[in-house]
Image (cartoon, rainbow, N blue to C red; front, side, top):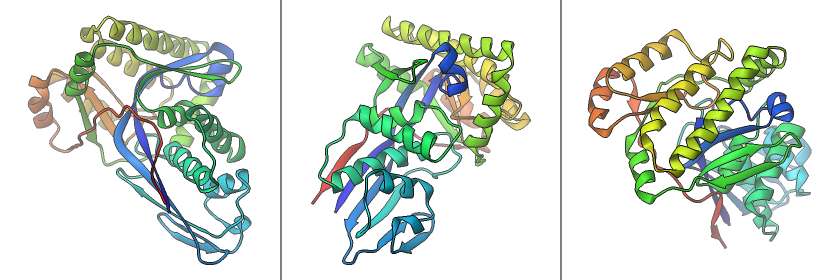
Amino acid sequence: MIISRTPLRMSFVGGGSHIPAFYRENGGAVVSTAIDKYVYVNVNKKFDSGIRIAYSKTEEVDSVGKIEHRIVKAVMSHLDLEGGLEITTIADIPSKGTGLGSSSTFTVGLLHVLNAFKGKYVSSEQLGEDSCFIEIDVCGEPIGKQDQYAAAFGGFNLIEFRPDDSVVVSPVICDRSTIADLEAGILVFYTGMTRSASELLRQQSEEVAGNVSKKRAIERMVRLAYDLRDELHKNNLAAFGEILHENWMLKKGLTSGISTTQIDEWYGLARSAGAKGGKILGAGAGGFLMLYAPPESHDAIKAALPMLRPISMGFEPLGSRIIFYH
């Protein structure tokens, strides 16, 4: 039996620049962190040559070609695995449409555990690259490359997307006290709404491709990612909320589906109660609302948003790990 543990992620600034329609022409960058919420993937040798997969449903098949789960099918084919195994998953957070990168986190964790099942070590860089290949090239998902590398590497990073499709992950360097203060200032609420990130990203890609003003908005968001990195290098947290707010205002304008009247109302209430900035995590339109505010304002913000469920999320320094190997 082998178990992988792979972190979900929280993105701050630059989201939208990680899609091919933008970064292949202009290059992109995001600032994000892995969080202490995980997807666990367990693989166990099966007593026969069949394949059993348990997720929101259970599949029992006798060949890879009959697997319905597209990612499991693609990964097993990619690794030349034929059968004789059982795969089960557990997630700390609802697995679809919540804006924490769960699909890519699962793909990274599955690649990690199945490589270990074959007795093969795989690096964080290779996990990120292979996960992108599986999701984007094999499964045809209209997504970017942020989530895969955030899950594979872990930590608090500037992730850059180069026009040649390469990805560079650089830790954000600042004092430990700055990270602690940043974590203490973050509030996350579950909106109770889920959505298809793929559809939003597909729509965004189509609208950005022929729109100069929207490309300029993403270019500004990329600049904000570097500005945020630079301010954190100087241990200046005073700029964090302001940059976060500007980024959200720009992101909302990329396509009509990213925000809603309800989300705008919640965000306005939070700002009135002391939040300096925030955003909907992930592609938008639901999932988790993340806010940054002085800790002394947190009670007032929670009181202003009684309809939303606060969720504790801390930073996670480590990426995908094999936590059990027997």
